[in-house]
Length: 373
Image (cartoon, rainbow, N blue to C red; front, side, top):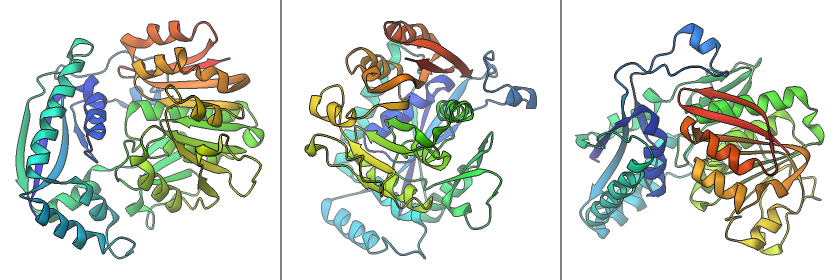
């Protein structure tokens, strides 16, 4: 199969936005190339406020791969051929995941046009760079191996986030190991916003006995933050997302992290079923801003710690319209990430009626805000 490599030129501070737009348009898995280098001293300080450390060249590239077929018959044949390998432990999982990036030519041309329009909508808020797109054809084997070449281990305090294909030959029992299938969901732990969130959760767990605490991850994606909470020993963890598209990847990550006591919650029942102690991890899909019943179901208990690693405009809506604070227990913490520094004040202002700022941290142009009720 021939794959086409698309490379979008942007700015370092906009890579997360570009990746998010691609994901929202059904493109799974991206690479990010930039010229940002951190010194050892910077790394030692990475979870306190630090100045901008970009080199003069702050151009970055967001890369994704697609296979474009001429018609539906060809598409159906290829998908059927790939689907027969699902569940086969001898087949690289990333190869199966790659089948999500196969598109019929006409459909992909429409999709690419929409991606361009969606990206340009952000130009009024963030310097998105040129957004110039180049493409190049590569062979099947090179595409598959790209996952392994670009997915590196991430160490944050005593937490190690690493790809599933390194599970058998790389495991440090002195750390909390979180294994991730580089699949369809946005979130591999490599972005600054996830690192800041992980640090925030770790700090909370150091200052509190989490064995009697409930945890909620809003916009869970690949589930990294929720998996961390589970492994830290929270009494109960719930992961929610607006898009059910992440379900396969989330469940895959739960399984490869040996989390078996989980289940999907049917929100039609009107409340989460917390009384069943067999399930310490649950997940659901819905929109707590637009769906009152869903919000009441998720909020049928109070949470001691809530994380939201999503973009600032969505966070502000969650604070003002979704009233996320209503889901917190007394003295509960709300950890917010995905916030560009220029949006920090707007987020704090939106939270000021109900919350006090407990702590802040930054990495590059991204900010994490830890609020207390």
